Length: 109
Image (cartoon, rainbow, N blue to C red; front, side, top):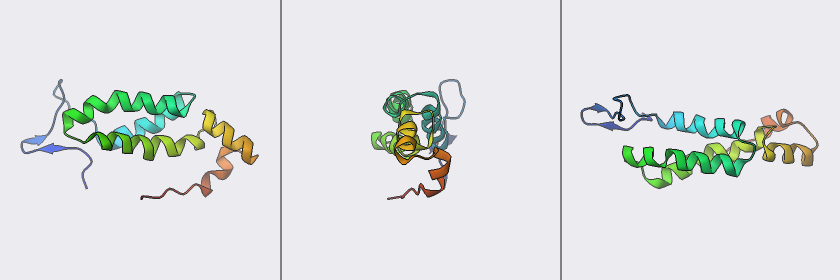
């Protein structure tokens, strides 16, 4: 399965002639923003607004951007110890985020 969108002529390119970022790049961006931003909703909004024009140009539906933010940004926020979600959950559970990491299972539903 390819993660980039292809046109009949080859890989679709951006304004500078470089290939568009793949969905995997955008998924990593959602997780990375959780590390950089101190709060999960802020990270999700920044990511969604930043990549929305790119999704439209590449022909993806708006739901795809929402899905990436939800499946990668939202669910991983509790695993970032310096994020407000990670801090809250680790304090409520009384354990470090690294300790409950093995018990975090993600559904592909």
